[in-house]
Image 1 (cartoon, helix red, strand yellow):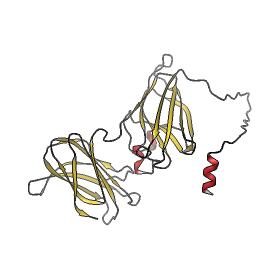
Image 2 (cartoon, helix red, strand yellow; image 1 turned 180 degrees about the vertical axis):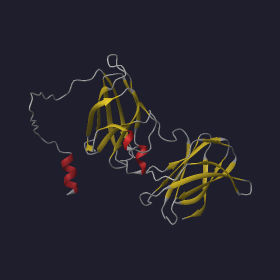
Image 3 (spheres, one colour; image 1 turned 60 degrees about the vertical axis):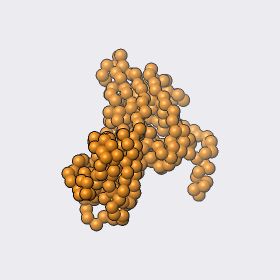
Length: 286
C-alpha cells in the first residue's frame, strides 16, 4: 500500500473545483502579482533537510532573513504578502515566517509564528496574509529529515521585500562532535572564540539538560566555571552556550547533566571554534 501511495503522489490527476457563495464571485487561476517580490532557489540536502519541529535537526533547515519595508502608500501599516514554496512533488514541505529578527531560529514557539503555509503538503505550499514592516526569519522545512529536493521560494508583497540566506550554526568555524560520552574534555591550541551545543538523542520527552564548561589547571583539576547554557531546558534543539573568548593552549571540562537523576540516554555534544580545531576527549563512557 505504501508503494502504491508513492506512485499516486507522482501521477497527474484531474480535478473539479466548485465554490458556493451568497454573493457574486470570480475565480482566477493566477491571482494578480503584488508590486514587489523576491525569489530564491535552493536545495534540501542531507545536511539541510532537518524535518519538522519535533526533530532536533529542525534547526538545520534552510532559513532566510525576510526584510519587509514600508510601502509608499501604506506607511507603517501591515502589508499584504503572499509566499509560495515549490519542491519535488513527492516531498512534503512547509514555509514558516517567525518573529526572529532575521537571525537563525533553533526552535519554534507558537507566539513567534507570524504566518505559515499550514500543514505539510506535497510539492507546493502557499499562503497569503498581512505583516507589519520588519525583519523576520523565514524557515523552509521538510516533514521528514534527510529528504532531498530542489526548491524555490517566492515572496510577493505590497512593499519592498528581500530574502537573504542565514548562515548555518557554526558556519565558517572549526567543528567537532562526539556522541554518547560523559564529562568530555575540550582542548584548544590557541586563543579562540568557542561555543558548544548539547542535544540528547533518545531521552524521554521533557528531559531537561544543561551544559557547563570549567577550566582545568595543569594537573587536571577542575577550576572556575567559564560559561554555562543557563537553566536546565527541555528544548528539542537542546541547549547551547554563548560564544566566549577562551585562552589556549588549555584544557576545559564540559559537564553535561540532566535535571532529574537516573536518566539514561545518549547525547551529542558539538563544539565550534573560530581560530583553531578543538580536540574532544571523554573521561567516561556510557
